[in-house]
Image (cartoon, rainbow, N blue to C red; front, side):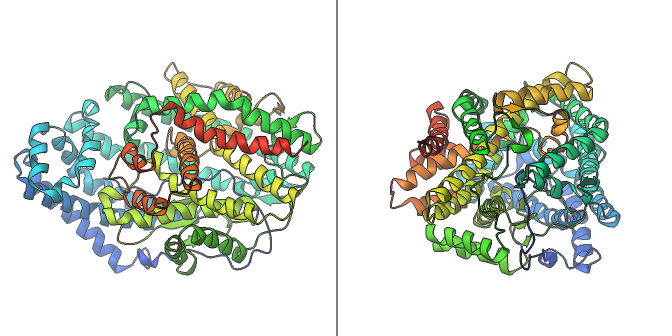
Length: 607
């Protein structure tokens, strides 16, 4: 089953402001009107019966089904996925609105427990599909075109065949999940949301404190960084316990499944070859000196500093306009950029703003960061932001809205094929950011304004590419080290500093306490090895955008076709119409050269 609580894909650059206008809130009634809604009770009862009936009708029989019967089986499974996904989307989104609310947390846990119990009888489905002979399945696909449409789904399931356990063990892992990773995820979320910080006498949550790292006042940035270090340090034993437990749990399951590396499961889920990810990682690490090292040396000069501290990394430039971007202005900026590319794109995006599909405000207990959750194909996505009015927040809006547009377009594939592998899931989001950036750059009236925009985009791309690959290396080191034994907080701290120093470069000094900043990164907890998807998406979009700028008259049509494909095609097939191939190591150099070219332009402005 694909449905769980929505795992938040957090944006690390959320930021701050005051006069923002009326910020939208979610209207979850398109899912259910309330936790005690009769429709929810009806669906929960239906789900319990549907799962039992499905198991009674199909367990032990999949290998003998003809093509039409197999299609009927897949469609019934898909319907179960939709109903379960609807319930868990509602419970999860309510929870992320206020993760410190005990009633919401209980409701989410109760829903998860019930649905895990209901769906335990369905574990046989994947196991039996993976025991069907290849020739038999191919014959079924050849016989029925409607069934053949689901071949990509079968291919992804069957990629796990070498790593499949016995039926009993698979059922055990399914049942045990609610007290395993899911429970540790919730502990992390609730702990992070409940942290309290005090900066210059003001009580803040983690979102407000991280936001101060982009403040114009260097003293305030330093105060925020030191307070973050203080609070993370006070809680580091708990965060180390969460990481130790989840990494060990993963190592045990990977060992039983005979996964050759800790990353293998993510690569299989992403439908991407390990060598493609390795080529991406190596290209980015090799480019550190000409990207992050070079840019931050330039930024230090702009800030009048010999050495940068960690609280200077996301500092605004002295030339930056400190004005807050209110919600209406942000909305217009993003929708205009989308409309300039294709009016259809803006039309798809408009309901997010008018129909309660975005929750934008910063509120006590609300999960930090930003994400877009697709819910299920017969409803619509929901976008969560923590909008505070900085230019980076506008880019975050453009990013998450890109996810939302992608999810709307892919819904036509149906529940089982709509979900896009993480490597391609970032395509529309990063492309939406690029459209918005180019729109703003075209409107720049002065050299200083252009410089500020370019520098902001370079920083965002470094955060998306360099920072995320450094995160990936940190995870690789952490899981490798945990396989050798328990890690102390100091062990994890050392791993963190090693990748930060390598990726950020020699211009940085790392204050005492920065070694604990791994503790708040949610990706490591919710989606191990997710982070390389950001770099994959950024490199892919840079290459795509270069094709767009070359003036391909069919680009928009090809682009929408790619988004509508959802998870129904491999990245090789989706990129072929654009003349691109992610398995070619030179592909990544194209994307990185776009970032390098922007730094070239910034350096030229110094002459």
